[in-house]
Image 1 (tube, rainbow, N blue to C red):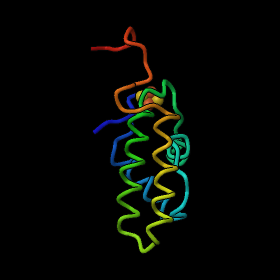
Image 2: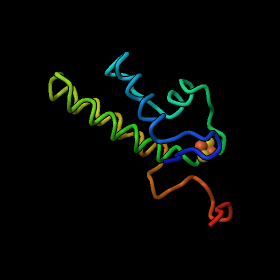
Image 3: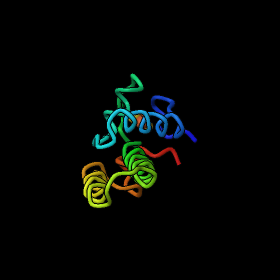
Length: 103
Ligand code: FES
């Protein structure tokens, strides 16, 4: 599924990049700009960032569910990751005004 229409980035590419960043440092606070930097892309309209944040949260939760880390450390880290929603918006807010929607 295409997540970023400006840069033609798929959800799978984003998921693989997040896992790669977590493999390097499981406690890394991953933000959309870090993912795009790794992909050698940059946010243009940034309307995809709320969806990227949801993907970061989902993949990070899943990654840590499989890890051997203690529960308290994981909960604390996931709380920080979920706070990205307030910073980048949630899925219903595309970050675009309705006048710029194609449909
Ligand atoms: S849709 Fe991703 S930067 Fe515009």
